[in-house]
Each structure stands twice: as C-alpha cells, then as structure tokens.
Image (cartoon, rainbow, N blue to C red; front, top):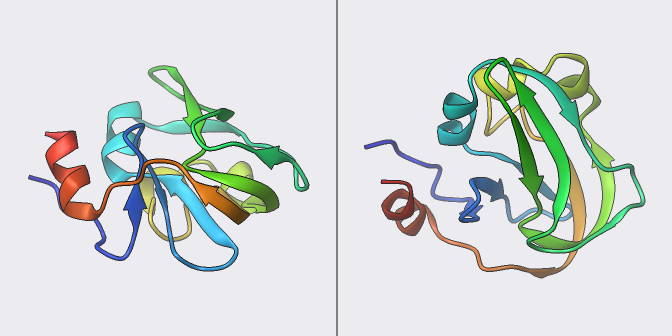
Length: 122
C-alpha cells in the first residue's frame, strides 16, 4: 500500500493541501502515477476566487485529460510557473516541486488525513 505524507490533507478527488498560509495544493503521487506522464497543466490565474470541490484546471497526460478540483475555497495567490514550464515535475516530485497553486484559504471542503486517504485510495 502506498504511503502519503502525514502533514498533508487530501481530497477524495486525489488532491492534497498543506497547512501553510497561503496553502499549497497539488495532486497525489497516486493520481500522478495513474495519469502517466503529465505533459500540460491548465491552472487558474492569480487573483481567481475558487470554491472547494469546483473544477479549477486541467492536467493533461500522455493517457488522458483530467480535471483538477480545489480542496479549498479562497483566492489564488500563486501558480507554479516551473510546473507549467516542465509538467514532468508533477510526476517526479508531486509533494514538493510539483505543487500546482497556492491559495489564501477561507474555508476547506471535506478533507481526509493520510490514513483516511490511504483507505479511500485502496
């Protein structure tokens, strides 16, 4: 069974969010592996107001195109330009350099801890 960083919270749609302020958001290693090689990212613009559970972008891989859901509500304050320029970093380092956006959080959707997410992902 895969392990997931304990300091993060997870959505049922396979996104993670950290507890920093602003909060970083990305996709889990499980999602990155399922997608295959990520080749393109479409992310919201800085200043966009996003809602927990809503589609906020797309991730295109060699296998498919998947929607990116926000695990939180708030305002986008940064997007990871390095990941846009080199989407492969989402596969190679999904919990580090492969983060996707940072959000000033006003509320969260339903989030799971690492153990709950691991059970959900089985």
